Image (tube, rainbow, N blue to C red; front, top):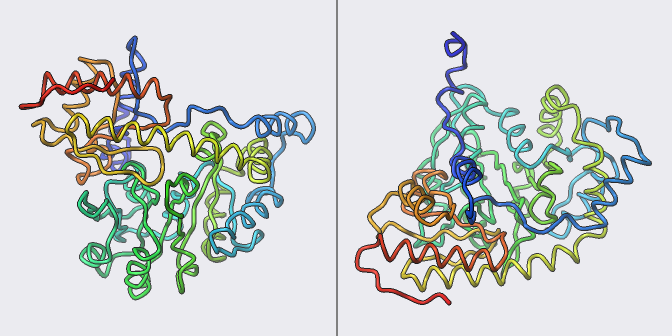
Length: 395
């Protein structure tokens, strides 16, 4: 009975491929999970204290729909380091995580029949959010031989008269790829010419290794057609605080605010005060976390390469994306069998779109000890499963 009442769009959307393996692993003993992109560091102490003090001293009432003015001002000040200039009162909206910001942007602009370009492999929520907004998600593939960078040519091939927007995430989840200024300049030329909206999820902007993050909105002619989205979950280890933001053209932010005020009201008050403290005093802890992630990054990439797997070197976020296609197993089968045989949870690349098939995503937001033990178990699994693999020692 109830099934007949469900929205057909919702029925057609698959559950998250990330959560599937996380939920299975949670019911098993002695499992090492490299599946979830969640920092294993605690939220910085001063940030936690700011949240506690906000409850005790500032109260727990609603804030403005668009967020605390002090926080919006701090967000705009922070974004100036990326050469972005936004008005905290008219061009800034505080949201419940970066995911809400992406959803709001899509719902504010997408109408039935509109197409939204989604570069793949990509974070699992973008395509479903485009569909739920009434549009059609169109995959734009990226490739290992291009370092998983988006190219102007592949975008151009997918643009039609129905194309309204493009959603991308750099540094990228799941590949760890980054887009440098030269890459973005070629893409910006295409997007300006076709007058498309860019929804740029830059939640991993602080997590880069040996490169500088460039925001596409900082390029000439792009700020007026870009929604820049960020958050506090990844860089400040604040996943459960659920806080993000969107900055962009006044007319678009106003439309996003309408949706936000009816379905959310405002982001959690105590999280907003905590985020303000993070922006004012939290960056030394961020730098320490990034240094540790960099060490883990080198360990996990070297480990996979010693096994004989091709492993693109991630330059951002905290994921690596080794290729397992030579093992004659689909990504889904590899992950299922690995979990059953060696109790290691990773995510099939196919969860991030068809372009991810043949790869697996492994998060290195875990301790070095966990990563090293997971690598030993994965190597043992490959020796039993892979064709003609010679035994290697991982320590």
